Length: 348
Image: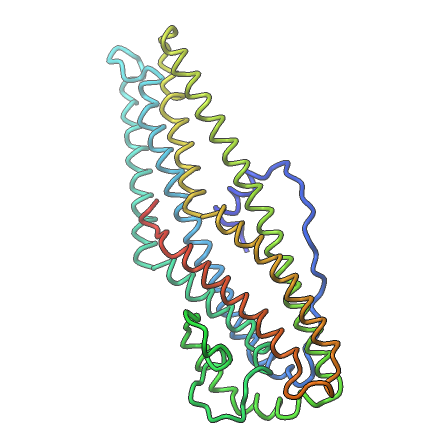
């Protein structure tokens, strides 16, 4: 997939930054009882994941393009003055209108991006697809926690396991997927908890999934913090140069100083706006907290998996440990939606 604009901007900001990514290692294979369920759900997850990536790129690249092209419009507006073409006696004065035309073109492109983003509802499509993809990803892991012996009053397995949890993500595709696989899951998992090796295999698989999420969020937090530091340093430099240009303008009446005193603060404001709309700081802070909580959740799963089944009166403690870990991921996803949702394209 081609690199999106927002990814290119982050790569430019991170030039020269070195950090060692946390490698989670390959995720272990699921228990044999869950493999058919994984095979059925994987294509659905992949379809929504691809849609989430597509619309996420559109939305984030869209507001970055609006911010940066707005600064470019300011540059085109001031260039005739900075180059001296605005003077009626300048030999290039007849071409000064070209910069005006470029400014109008940039504003037109910004308007088209905004119109397409609103009409296509890029942000909402991204959030919906990402929620569905996330819920699909953990559905096979959740299946052993569902009591399939009870009547199916609620098709959504998440709502059956987390009945007391408010603000669960809602996705019609998930409820439909659960209903379609209800009978198959019941047959596959009817005696799974009593089968030799299931508990160990289920625990190892769950730990691999949560370790992957822990690595993802740790790397995300590091990159976001590094991007923020670079963006703040760049903004400080731009506004510092603006101040120098303004001071020089008191004694040196050069028209080119107009570029420094108008375009540089506009570019700095655009970068600040893009970073603010991306909510990098809040997302990085949330990821840092989740890394610690997932570490504790993994330890609880390891501890629960080591308890012999004969010592439990009901289901193995692993049931509760994995349920708590999934709850952490659902809570993080809900918080992410609350952070991103208010930042619609119109803010740019």
